[in-house]
Image (tube, rainbow over the protein chains, first blue to last red):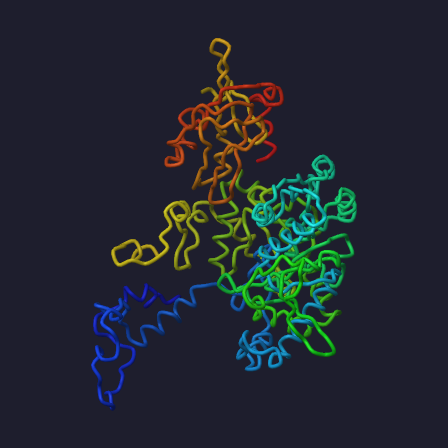
Length: 492
Length: 131
């Protein structure tokens, strides 16, 4: 039974006079505050802090920590997110003193080890992507997209070309068109064919000399590898445009093929997905980008360079788009990616991809007897099933299935994305799950589809909150605790 | 309005044209099917009256807990009137999508795009395929 004791906000637990620690009596002469600080600096009231005991605080945080699902405790088939296990070795190495005690303002001579690590990571990502120039600066995948589009913008400005449009398929991540707009381009959507590939006729009709970049996710969000990708690249290049590969799904092709080899000019990696960095609390993430040689000159500064066995941060790059992040990016995540890549080596990384694809296909072969999978009987690292028939027949939605899975101890798959498949569930098991876990998940999903609709609409029953009111949460978000709000106490 | 007498875009907007002494006015909304597919609505963004739109131009946005969808103009014209009550009473869209849930009124400058729109029967067929 989950324990809810002391899980309310600390301010609600507060009772006047309660203390977690008591200071010993002062054993030096006491000076009046007025003699130490001018009057204007002194507060007139004590700060409003919760007054709680140590056990209350410990229970508060410990019990809250058990209300969540995590990769360490649950199967987490959240499609597109690659929720693979995060090896504890990464954490141990990233936590060593030589790494955590560094300060970015230290002289370069004293951080040679860290600079070597970052330099080698640049080289590794270049090799894995097939694109030689790397920036580790972007702080997230979407930030990588934006940075790469700014790099493309700088390139076209320098060559005097006026290109205003960025194309992306309708199955793309929402970040693609958003990054395009933020980088100052117009975003144009390309249709998908019934098979889930880029609709070549639609692409041809929208291609012209105003197109700066075509952003493609391959394998795409339906979990299928678009074999037309080389043809698409050639076509876009013929019009002078660039290909951006959204690297969110690199887990499926690591060591098997390289974006640089199938025509991409730019891409980002999501180290928290592909290279097992933690997905904790919305960050810090990292979104390193790799670009072709010609675009390398525009990458953000600094870049780590090597000269005669010495490493330094290079800022003197006149064609660079400048800084996109303070200091050297989110180094902590990059260190974990480095550990992961070194632990696996080239053959190991290829096996990661092979096992991710094998696991997804095994689960697909079981799930398609429970829910239709509209885009084929084979997939890459993930697949998209639909509850459309179930909704028509019994009124049970993808949302209901996802919520009910929580009761059985499984995190829900991604639902209602991609937007091209109605009532969809996007399932990505990753390579780190066993056959037993996949079987248990498939059997649970089957069991749920047999349950009465009325029951499913009211699930989950076992979580701290059942179904939050999403409309009110979106329209009238209550983002901070305030002493006058009663709803905080009843509606956590 | 009677949904059987309206014309529909593939993108689920409906339009009704009235002709008063040579000047044509178009009333635009979104279909019941679209509202049901969007599920719970949270926000809506509407244009300012006076804006000129071409057929197929995006004139606004509707956001649900699931996704953001653009609203496209079925015909070309100048926006005369906008249903400003909607964003605060989004339930109107699901309760009365063909009446009180109208979104904009346009002074039609060019109705040639009407030829490409679907009639009720054709639209029903499209919805059945999409569902």
